[in-house]
Image 1 (cartoon, rainbow, N blue to C red):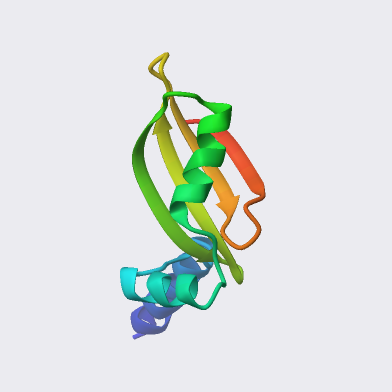
Image 2: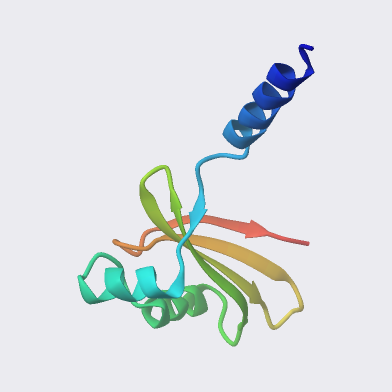
Amino acid sequence: MHARPIAAAAVLLLAAATGSARDIGHDEALQLRRSGELLALAELLERARTRYPDATLLEADLERESGTLVYELELLTRDGRVRELEFDARSGTLLSDKDED
């Protein structure tokens, strides 16, 4: 009898534990770009490549994390390492640079 409320509470706790990051879709990203609320992905990729010349872009995601627009760029460096860089999508500030290996 108490299984449903417990299961519902578990789902809510799991949702809260996963954080508040939300992927931004293409249409919303285009609207944000046109309104000047975020930098072009190409500009942030250039910033990433100043850190890792000749790196290959493997994946790029735009997310809203706790109200902040964040680009996550996954790069394959010329020495074969995978790096994940996070940039503030409005200011271009590098937020993190992690080795994914």
